[in-house]
Length: 91
Image (cartoon, rainbow, N blue to C red; front, side, top):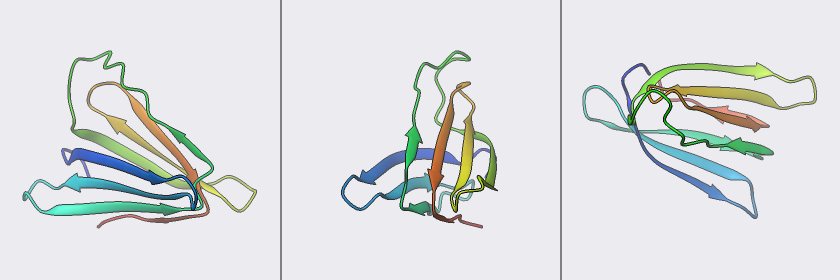
């Protein structure tokens, strides 16, 4: 997912369903989904300057309690962290 663009993040608070809209390097719309989200950290401080591009993604990494963690490293220097019961990552 290197160089894919982050477009929008949506969390349905009541159900914990998360969708992250992305655009791949071929300009195709893609979605990263998670269910039963318990943690969502979305800093937007941009220490490396403005960017909506993904540098790399780590995970899903099991947390030992039935959840997994995904970390999205953005080229702005920010990291989005998601902890959820299940993930569906685009390929």
